[in-house]
Length: 326
Ligand SMILES: NC(=O)c1ccc[n+]([C@@H]2O[C@H](COP(=O)([O-])OP(=O)(O)OC[C@H]3O[C@@H](n4cnc5c(N)ncnc54)[C@H](OP(=O)(O)O)[C@@H]3O)[C@@H](O)[C@H]2O)c1
Image (cartoon, rainbow, N blue to C red; front, top):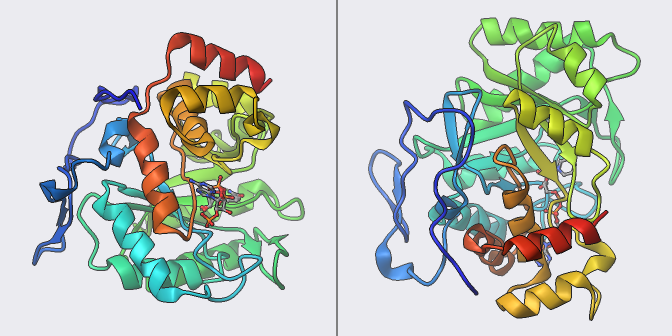
């Protein structure tokens, strides 16, 4: 697979926090993870470049989404909790320093596993969590944005994640039965109290995002977006223009593009890469504000996904995939 070192990406200057990692894992007394050089064949998330969330939280752009380390229907514990811990630790070993989770994943299971696997956290690890969807059963998600509920969930996420402040707190959904001014107003109060560092949104339109920015400082948006689903293209364009992080969920979905003989298949064959890797490489190239968070409960898939960080598409390949996905 053709590879090269990517230059750091992202429109926001990087300062304040160390982001550099070499290759292979060691946990020091201070909880810092360095990577040994015994693993040179495995590319790391470092190769994906850097974006500074909110201007002061530099992360490697290829992150990890921790929704899949729960039970079926994102409900209850995973069938292999030790495997989930291994995936989280391997992600950090491979240079991932941006992990997305939510109170509702399990619920609570994902956040608890993150703390179990990774606390005390490496200094440069950014954990982004969310609240605003309650769970009443497997695969059931109900928006609740009442201020008292959001406050409780911030407090409980702090407790579960063993943090004093949440670096990026995302409103999981805008609750149609609660004024967004009330929901975001409570997050602003929590921010002023030092319990939240930055605020992000999830599954919003450009109008909702622009309106939210009149209420609070929004640093990121997390919408479904992938090679085969560009419904949020306008939100991405807005985020790019405004320097907000764009966190595409369901990033490895490639749909029918990956069919035998399809456009992904041929480019994948040319690179010796998998369709999932191409989907991630396409996202990383699509925009410097793109922060993909592929989720998996498998170390093999994790390593495969991280390896996409230094898969470089030619201009023609990028254009062909761009066109095929429309
Ligand atoms: N804001 C929101 O509303 C929202 C909604 C959904 C998700 N999210 C976030 O976005 C993250 C990613 O979304 P997602 O988990 O729905 O989608 P995804 O990461 O695109 O895909 C996950 C699925 O793909 C499989 N997979 C992962 N890597 C693979 C590979 N290399 N080859 C083949 N299959 C692979 C996984 O199965 P295996 O486990 O078997 O690998 C899993 O079934 C979540 O973890 C969560 O943090 C946010």
